[in-house]
Length: 128
Image 1 (cartoon, rainbow, N blue to C red):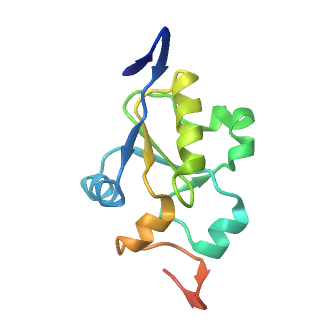
Image 2 (image 1 turned 120 degrees about the vertical axis):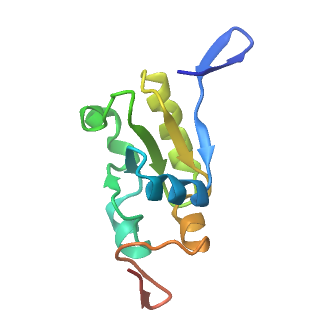
């Protein structure tokens, strides 16, 4: 696992990836665990990236056993804008999880890049 150093503190590093990069990883069949940390109502309201596993941010600590810790799987943490997911990604890295990515811009960036979501009603139009 990579680490960043801030003074005497060593922090595990988390890579920010774009929606286009994530789509490419999915198309190539990269082993991924897509972790959406939004509340369930947000997935219903705004849609979800196909294949996500939903564990709301407030439940991550008690549900760590549901997140794969094998080194061969990349964990991509997702929220609506990329802020909550960034916090969760750093938390997972600090807990010893490796190969962690944060989806920069979250589901909003995914939709703006033209990618498909499942469910969701936004602007009166159902997606996926």
